[in-house]
Image 1 (cartoon, helix red, strand yellow):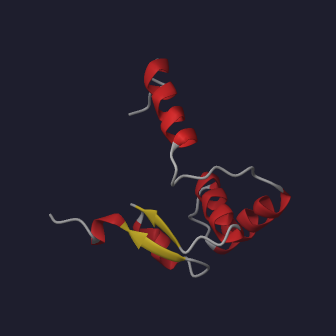
Image 2 (cartoon, helix red, strand yellow; image 1 turned 60 degrees about the vertical axis):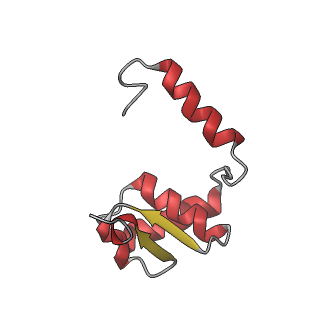
Image 3 (cartoon, rainbow, N blue to C red; image 1 turned 180 degrees about the vertical axis):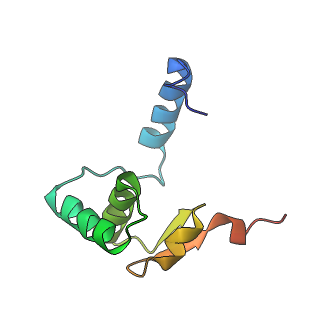
Length: 91
C-alpha cells in the first residue's frame, strides 16, 4: 500500500504510530556521518537506491547486528549481515 499516494491519511497515521511507539523500533536522525556512509555505499553498490543506502548506513552507524530485506541484491553488501525474508518463508 501507498497510503499517502492513495490519499489514505488515516492509514499513514497508523503507520506513523506503529513506528514511533513500538518498543523494538528505533528512529534515528540522519546526520552527516550517515550521509557520508550512504554515499560510499552508493558508490560501491551502484544499484543501491538512496533511501536503501541511508537505511544501511544508519544500521551500520548504530551497530545493528542485521538488516532484513526482500531485495536479493542486498546479499552483495558486505558491511553488515543481511537477511533476505524469502529465505525464511515457506512457499
